Each structure stands twice: as C-alpha cells, then as structure tokens.
Length: 266
Image 1 (cartoon, rainbow, N blue to C red):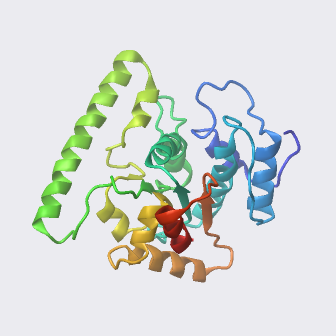
Image 2: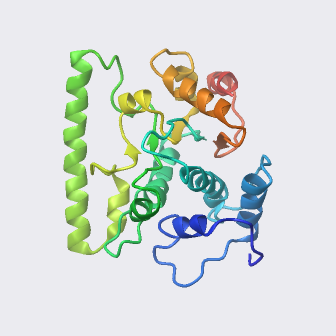
C-alpha cells in the first residue's frame, strides 16, 4: 500500500526496528489489509475483524495500531509514567501465545549492535521508557501468594533457570551469528521490557498482556490480579484519548466447559 496515512515518523521509525526490518531490505510497504487495519483502528478508531489466509500478515494488523498508540502516548511519559494494560491479546492455546511472544520480543525488546533495535530507539527517543509486555498463563511463574516463603523460593528457582537459558541463547547466537535464537527465550537483561513472572505483573500492569480464555476467567475472579484491572480502569478514565485494545486471535466456536469460560470472560 503506497497511500500515505497521517502517522508520525516516530511510528514509522519504531516499527522498522523490530516489527518489520530483520532480513527485509529497502522500503517496507504495507499490504492492503494491513493498511486498512491501521487506518480503521488507529486513525478512525473503529473495531475491526481481519479474515485473510495463513501467513498473510494478520499479526501486523493488530500490532500496528497497538504500537502506534504506545509510540504516540509515550511522547508525554515522564519518569512516573502511568502503568496500565493498553492491550490484551487472547489466544485459545498456550502454543499460539508463545509464538506471539517471539514476535513481541522482536518488535518491542530488540537490541542490535548497530543501535537500530527497539530498545535502542526507546533509549534515544523516549528517555529509556519501555513498552512492557508479559504472558500470563498457567505456565507463567509463580502461582500462589507472593508473601509466602515457598512462592519466593520458587520464584528464585525459576529466575535462575531463565538466566541460564538466556545465557545459553546469547552464547549460541554469538557462535552461530543467528540473533533469532535470542527471541525464543525471555530476555533477562536488567533493562528488558518483558515481564516473565506473575508477581511483577500483579504489582505493575504490563502495557500488553497475553493470556488465554481459561486464565482470564480465573484472574477476573481473584483479588491478587485486581490491581492490573484497577490500574487500567484508572488510566482509561484519565483521558478520553486512552484506548484499550482487546485482540482475539483467532475466532473459534466453543462448546461445553471451554464455551462457558469464554462466555464468562468476554
């Protein structure tokens, strides 16, 4: 798509650090459905449904509006920027959620030797702010009460294991020259935008939360996750320009217990 949209060059620059870029050379033009999704959702503030084939770039159709809103809002962030869920992405399966984490790590948490990664851009243009994201599913550590010693011990154990995975990924990427390996495990650097444990997300809501229907049904009924939704409610009430993105990827029909969970959550 070649027709220009009234979108800042900041958005253009940021999406080319990770969402696009990579092995792409030269100018990256949007497909028609990506262009229309960005125009309808970000410019015209419409709800959208995207129905195209596998591998046609549907993920960009919802990530582009979300990222565009984050880039625009972050211009006014200070050191005490408001924490809230700007977007929730719902998946029917944990495997699909994990695939999305790879895309988000590239789009929001990349750092490159030539200084053209997402974190490099945020350091240079947003004072080091981060677009936080996290996967909140049954496999996300750690369940239970964060005040309990047992939970804290389990958290330390999980952190140690993830640090080892991250170290191994960095070593493999360095040896093979394949930076793709870095995006298949949580980044454990101090300045990372990825939130890998439940307690951190309960204390400070991620900008983008990835979950599934079963987990959403559970956390909507528990007190420990209520700060995530309270902070989001407060942020939405602060300014009419604040928009919450709800992404359902993909649309399915559900029956029985699964259908009940979906109905209760939505």
